[in-house]
Length: 117
Image (cartoon, rainbow, N blue to C red):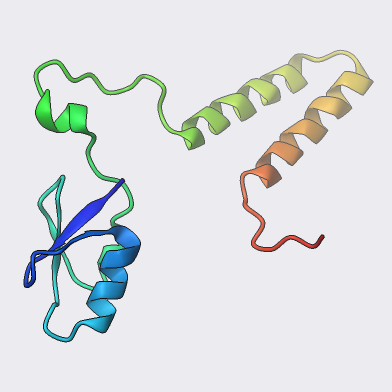
């Protein structure tokens, strides 16, 4: 979770609260990230989504980056495995199933903005 501190009034704020604070307060123009110590104005704060972890910040000597990677690399790895299976597949039914699941997985990455009930 990203936490900010206002440089003028020293109020501790979460990201959504920091955006509202910068929009509503006239004298406050900058907030500082608690973890990475960078300053942001009301336009650049939206780009600050991910920050360093506590292990990376406080335990630099023993910190090893996670071998898990991010979700996009996992998705790309899975798609490449499915494509390889499609090329090596002999059965037409299995090939059709793999092609369909590959297409569906690409669509599932996008979130639906609204749902109709």
